[in-house]
Image (cartoon, rainbow, N blue to C red; front, side, top):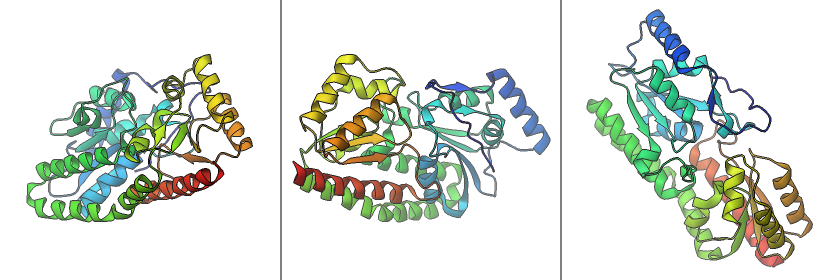
Length: 316
């Protein structure tokens, strides 16, 4: 199924939908009537899965194999997922889904609105923020926490088994296969943790907070700065000044930035870091390239981070 992403409006980071809940609900009802869909998407066939973001979709697809068909909504690496606006294609996908996976914590509120507009009997929903005990206002970049990734994978497998009990053995085997496929990703994390623990790093946004903790890196960027950029707000002047001072005084060995969120302030910080000889690397919110797997995407970013840490330590 094709899904379309629309470019966010300039300077907009709010979570909005393209139509009201009433209109989307009406459209979804027409879709169901026209297609004769049951909405559960299980039966004797595959489970129709809709993931709000392609990183969760990649994991869901690997855990389900040929027993699932996964549609990922947010999959454009050139747009800011925080500013995504849903459309009628999304309503159609949700209407036929037997299983929906949303990040939650305010990250994909458009998805919750689509669910509310179109309740379907038998549809199972995984709200990852609920699973993790997180709420709106908490850092929503859960996929950058390796422990959270494992917890989510376990829940997806458990939900698949509930939807298709007869395939429990197959789903269990696929969970084992997925765990094995994470080896390079986890080995890289352990290597960085053992070789670069307590290295001071900076990040322009909260996207890197969870991974920095998993790697035992000392993320010294002003929290108020990272939070403001993540929410699309202007960071406090004192936080900007502190961040600039950290770079000029080379208090950080590496600067990490979000490739999908760019402002004049973050661009200036990147240029300042380059001028000071501090390695700068970009990480993304959605998978790059779009057709890769979650673990290959993450591992490739960790390789770049490892190289930057080695370079930054030599320069320091």
